[in-house]
Length: 141
Image 1 (cartoon, rainbow, N blue to C red):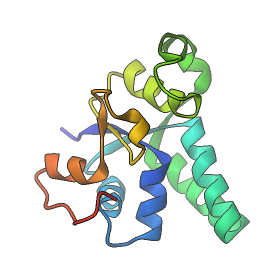
Image 2: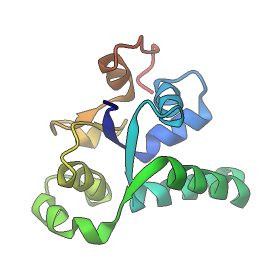
Image 3: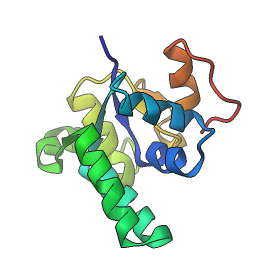
């Protein structure tokens, strides 16, 4: 059975920026259908904004389409109750991601954001690659 995980925006950004990263291993596995990924509306916005700012509109549209085709999307409106129960436990900018992982009972929230430390779902890309039985790259990214 394929692992189903929540992927934070930084995983996509590092994967696309650094072809020799643990994030790239994860995205390659996603593209190959070896894992299932869930993202939130916020993750889509953050990825799009990053690529629009750095590379322009065409890149932003390309990555938006990639996310929509390769990932399941959880909507903010469906997370309201879980977000309310977690408010104050994590920064507001990270609330939607943690709420999505909790609401969907996902074992892993893969991120480089240390604000998730202390939450059982949190795992870095490097550690996640290791849990899959693969040899991780040196960096956490």
